[in-house]
Image 1 (tube, one colour):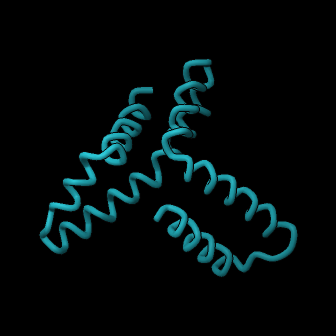
Image 2 (cartoon, helix red, strand yellow):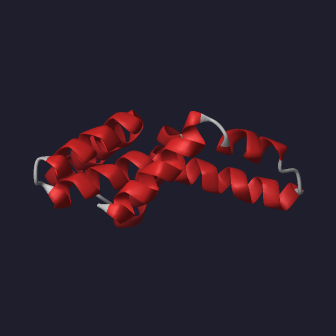
Length: 113
């Protein structure tokens, strides 16, 4: 789900800003690197924690927020669906998995760092 969201965002940016030429290639490369880091999820969060441990606090915080971003978006979408349909079983099931707990812990790590 995370890659689909990023692909939709990229299509919007590409068409809205009318990107062409070398600038479009550069922006596309940066966006693909961010997609790659976000798709790693928990690994990116762990690398961010290691960066903070090594004294690179800003880099670590950025990596943590990128790593937990797709999980947070997934939980937010599932919350909105559960709220709209008034069926909380799927949302509660997701919150009790590694995805839900890991995302909440990553957000807490970002705040505590």
